[in-house]
Image (cartoon, one colour):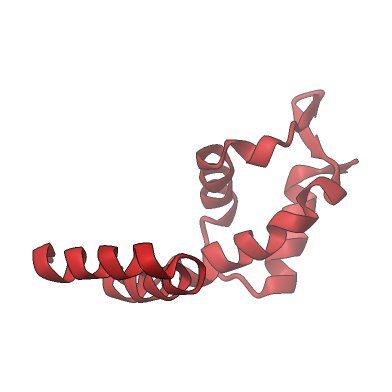
Amino acid sequence: MIEFKEFFLNIKKVYGITSDTFLKDLSSFLVDNKWFGIKPVWKDSTMYIEPSDFQEYLPLIKEYFANSNMDIHEKYEILKEKLIASMSDTSNKLITFYDQFDTC
């Protein structure tokens, strides 16, 4: 086990994440995703994690922070590309709907 803060500050450095609110934003991201089912361990008011529990989610964390400074239209384009790649029929319908009714 390793201290949560130590592990993720190292991930921040490795991925070149420059966010000043990284740990706060990361905590929100993990809570929003129900910690991906991972259970941290608390000892003496310090949170510890098992690094191997996070390995498959590190690319998602990297992507989240890589896209966090984008505006809504840039995020929409990335989401659209992902939808087209994974659910082409659904994505075509959603894109048509969005293009017709978007008021942004």
